[in-house]
Length: 282
Image (cartoon, rainbow, N blue to C red):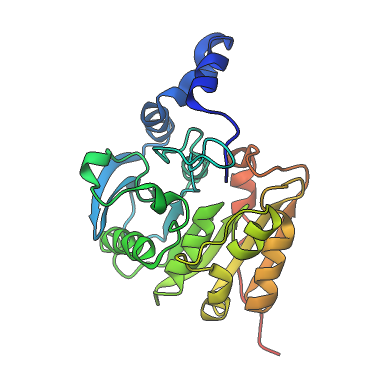
């Protein structure tokens, strides 16, 4: 979603922040490396079709499920009308969720053009973090990367977790695969047409809308976590998706006091204990 601050404004703000904690975002790759290192996640570059993707991963027990996290839209915009020249996240919320997961097999996938040098991604351009951010070729690349990691833990269940726009990608990937056991989304943009209308911004006809694929993932156990105070992707978005998917396998959980960019990683270990399940058919 649009970011209110330009790079210059962020730099100026950092001059007034003590201890340097607020300035970590000026080096987003170093910031991500530090988050990952603390959780024993190793950075990798994955050649995945149209894009070279950056991932952070640990696979300590190949016989255990694979938890795969997908990052949000990142620094896609620097104002309501001006797109960024680099969508790399400044806060890396999706990576923070992955780092908070105690599972032995954790994979974090950045979205196309995030973290990876543009020179390695000649196809990268502003459309791929604005109007085409959920385009079929984006989903295909992410799906390719997931398959490469799944090959390291063959036969194991795959649990997808997506934050914000990464939730859309998670659903679109799941609709392509037969080995996804569960989906969890956090502040997920699960209906981009509805969200764009809500914020009076342009539609994205070159992107797929996850709610249109709700029926294809209806048999996958899923929980969609929304922040009660999220005015970017409000809880109504997840509710719309669950209504489209049907209640047998999909449910909504609203987290009190949480905003879109709130401290989700702090509460994530507790939220993870709620396992997605499908109920018996009526």
